[in-house]
Length: 339
Ligand code: KG4
Ligand code: ZN
Image (cartoon, rainbow, N blue to C red; front, side, top):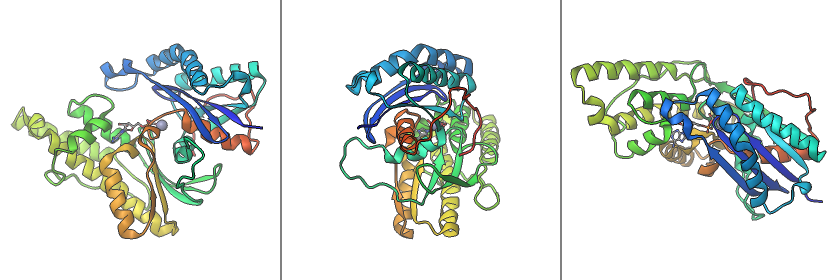
């Protein structure tokens, strides 16, 4: 009999639902919340309300697009955390209610596992080139920057992580300093294409082993611009593309240096990236260059599955379902959780 999983994602500002049948994606509906743009960042209270508004139509559309009847669903996977508590509560409560009504298993998914397992989202049963276990994954999102050894669909080990800000946060906060819209990552990526990466130099953090740090970069970027704007009020406007390219170059250097070290330390040459920042075109180019030079097998996720989506939750839930890992109905969301 087929296994059909409904996945629900509501950890931050995307309400998303997806249906996966026997490991193949049938639908993935994502409702992004525009309401936060005016505030230059996600407002938790507004995010929960928007999830509450969106969840029913988003799930309904995902089921319709998958062309299934809800009675055929085998299990409901939901993001338990990490994320914003109010946002997580909406998805968790909805998943519980529907699982209870349909009398089917409830499956908790760690949002970070979802990002990593986005590499296994398949649109049909054609054979695709997937990472082989164990592989190394650089997870770079708005909330996390981690180096992970992925041992199986269920077992992952963090071997390095940021001690302060995440890489996506560095993009977003520096974009805000330059007056760019939220989220800043995509804007910096685009503007950097017209800029020169070697015009401005920002210092690299000194952090032990496989850990990362981005808060110093953000602060030095802020002080540098405050000084320059005092001398010339049009400085940011004049040099926007070069600033974006130089900042992006520094962030990529920080990430690449640690990834190289992680490959050396673990001896694992199957290398993947995941999370919103994995959409960054210059990061993808630089890692492609490094992989060829260092003889790694590199896996770049499909762009639309890098940022938050329920397809990654449904696929992670599918593998948990196969392993019989079900959640009880007294489960609660967790805003902070390790991999
Ligand atoms: O994975 P994600 O959707 O949410 C979290 O779980 O945090 O990641 C969102 C982050 C934001 O910081 C956003 O600026 C960044 O991913 N991002 C990018 C790009 N697209 C999204 N950063 C750099 N370049 C991009 N093209
Ligand atoms: Zn995420």
